[in-house]
Image (cartoon, rainbow, N blue to C red; front, side, top):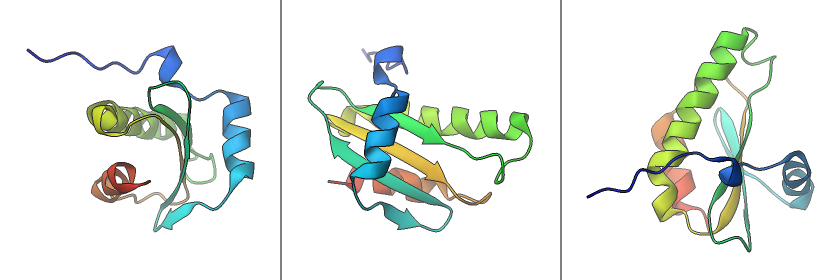
Length: 107
């Protein structure tokens, strides 16, 4: 029996959490995206996304990419531990397998 893993409100990073991550230190940079990770005291992984308008000018495309990244997070959240994760896209072409590899393998 599998437990359904949802992307609930408590799994989302707020504005202040995102600002703290951005100011907090170096990012893991890959072609098309960067990943910032920090341990959190909440016992669950939390996700923040930055999908800029300059990369995806149409809102439809930005929203679709966010849905895809949230689904990737939802599918791997059991293996992520207690961390705050911020994914910032910088290019239109993003290898989702590379994003997943970085998510699961990040400290």
